[in-house]
Length: 424
Image (cartoon, rainbow, N blue to C red; front, top):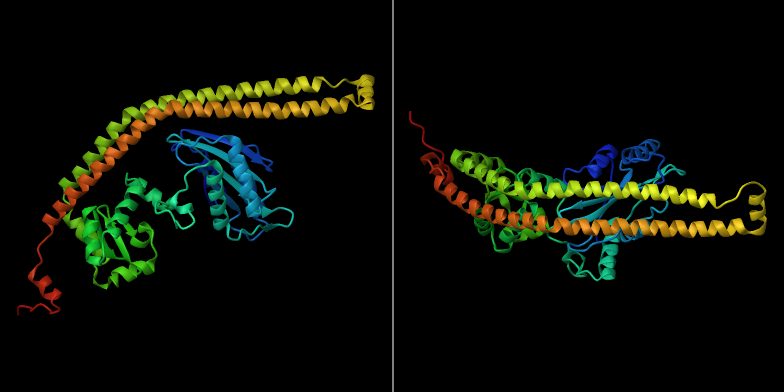
């Protein structure tokens, strides 16, 4: 599974994000270890409170565990991966929380550790944590027989579809999958051998090349959002400079935005809006169907949790009742019968935990299967919508080129490097 970790602060924001059901069909707080609080908000608030006794600002380490698409991973396998990551990062014994998410037919986990050693009152250093997590990811893929993604192959380099949370959120606000943006910019980069060729290739996909504020190359979409070429194409800045040279001949971001604002007509904006509305309407029915399924599944999981809790309490009482009291209990302690009962109770408790975990995993697998048809329908719609957007973008760019205002005589004079003559 892919492991992505980061040091961070913001306990309240992280807890709210992990518990949010807005983007997740199911959310389950699986584990709270080493905290006095019995809820996620309280647990992460404890980590913050303890960190106040140190100079550490990024007092948590947050890790996401993402199995490949189509793989169904049980609770025990997630726990084993988290335990191994904890060991390799030097976070053994630190308070930790584990949360399961299910989204679009996939189950993944988030683990959060406190970095503060409460006894020494210092933050635990995490050197080379990215490399260590990458190594563990590769081992987990090989262990489970999953096909290695490019980013984990020995000579594969970084996966070009990795993007930051900021990149994802910005693209989501525009209603476009960030993978589409990365694909468009990577495709234009691969088909270009100069700045002029890159500009033409980007315009075919609805982006316009400009000189960034830091003298780099950036792409601007028709909404005015800016995408650095090196970051979104997944290449180094020096590779961009070697291929394209200096960006001095390009217009600035402000000039390109101003030009786009002048050239985008109200009709084109209406066209964009109508397309978005149509796509939203088409997705309403399958999304509503999926919401109904999820509500039923949440009720089933709540019922299972309640039934397991009631059974655990009953079995705990039954095991406790095996111990006799008074003189009979003293006799059992002397003869060793009490010790035998204790071992038997411990073994039964472990078996009961495994049974409960197997029941939960079986229900999750069944629920994933129930949602698969609806999610495949939504996925096929999204693919068609992406194609619609590509066609729409080509038409919009063609219209923009037709609407490009002609150069004025003064502009042509400035382009030749001469000042315009003023009429007395």
